[in-house]
Image 1 (cartoon, one colour):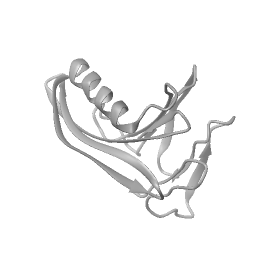
Image 2: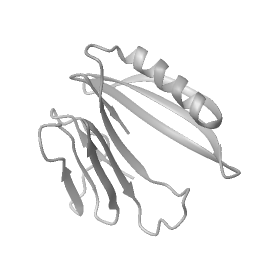
Image 3: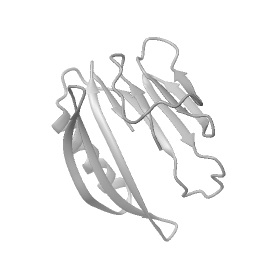
Image 4: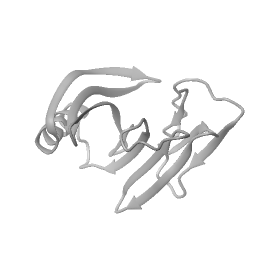
Amino acid sequence: MSLFFGLQEGISVGEVESSWINYTLSGDMGISFSYSSIWMVMNDTNKDNDIIITLNPPNNFDLFAEKMIFGMERLQPNMPLHDYSNNAIKILSRTMDNFQLLDSNSFVVSGTVWERILFTHETENRVIKVLQFWCIKDNYVYII
């Protein structure tokens, strides 16, 4: 899947196709993206400066099927990415059954440092593999 995701300056990953739909969060939160017209926005939650947006591909009838979730959370002022990442991994390891961190590293996209983690956990006797990215900008963490 190709994806366009922006943090006001227009960070992009992948290609934008003409059959894509633009999504912009109302207000000044600075989140917008384009997604394939065959995918659907399943929920859009904006509460107490935290945002969760879930995209599902077509024919997604399986509870554990592929999906994409965008999250945005207000942080303490000037929290370093490294500190956030360590805290996030600790929380995941405490809250998910059989959490296993497979890989973790930083990378740069359009001058912004992101953290990427790959992990597995178990739920309902299934092993789920999750790829998660996040970056910090203006005291918000953006999570994909």
